[in-house]
Image (cartoon, rainbow, N blue to C red; front, side, top):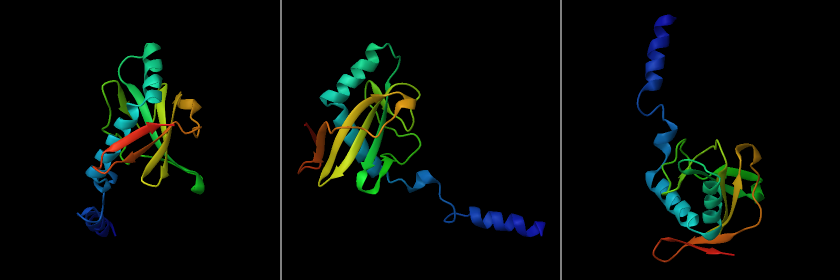
Amino acid sequence: MKRLVLPALLALAAPGCMHSRASLIKPDEEASKCELVQTLMREQVPQALLAGIAADGRDGPSQVLVFVRRPEEAMLERLFAGDEPRCGGPNYQVVQSSTSDAVVLFLQPRVGGYIYDAVRAAPDELSLGGEAKGAIMKNEGGAWVSSSI
């Protein structure tokens, strides 16, 4: 019986049978998501939230959480698939969970893009977001373009 266990484990571990979560993430999709977030973080409301966190004396880049809100399905999901998104800017870093006050972006899909909300929240004060602050969509050249509401 013990002799069958090792070959069975080796067969399961062979290429094609086991896939890590990271190997299923398409790099071009994650890059497009990062461009989306970077465009949003240049908007007035997220910039004001970052400034507020910096004014409180936080060291290092501020944390940013990004969720996609799907109210018709009563669902909230993370935008980035990986455990450690490689996305940020000069004063922020996108994370999957926060350890201090963070800027939280909520995206809701719309034709050709998203409407978004941005709030500041502590790790134990996360909500489902509120009123839309703006919209973002791709232009004819494929770049993300945002506008405030």
